[in-house]
Length: 99
Image (tube, rainbow, N blue to C red; front, side, top):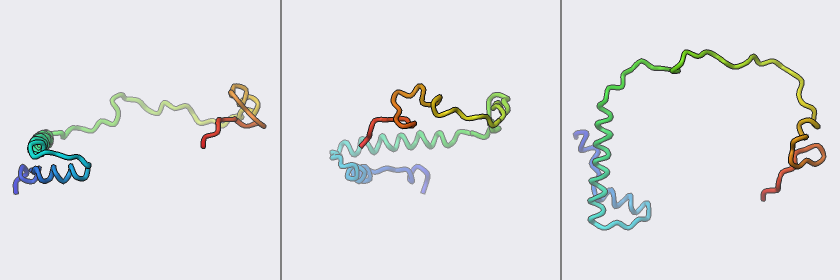
């Protein structure tokens, strides 16, 4: 069995897909879609033939770790954190109820 025969989509297969998707298809539509899907698979076959053997590039630019050092520092006080909150109650953020 050749590669093209393996990829052959028949109108019966299109009808099966249509039934799964709950789409009514006429006979002419089944033939049309089967042809279009086979053309798409042929294009994928052409893409498979392309030589993609290239040296892998992990990053385009020669960048190294640009993150700052992780240094422990004092955390913010509760009042400072809640200072810009639109609503707060009893020292917590207050958000709209979602039910």
